Length: 107
Image (cartoon, rainbow, N blue to C red; front, side):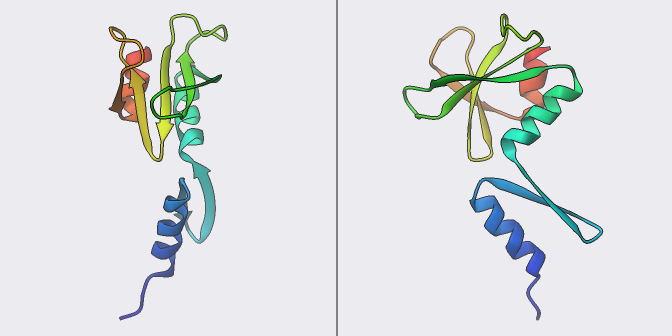
């Protein structure tokens, strides 16, 4: 049985933190962060880097909000292909959520 080369390429790119989309022979690579940013932009939300890191994970923090000033937005970080959203009631505590849940939480 012949191995599927496209699957191996997808696996390798996933290990590097990117997702590979193949459509009719064309290949383009998008990072998970780009997918989150594009999904947010579709509903007029802005994703901004806070230039800070989470003290526990060491991952860069981002804010998603409707306004450019970031007020009333939500803080999150990305680790591999998972979004960790900061709890509103407990600062510094993060829970994993989907892209859809992140957007719904912010709208």
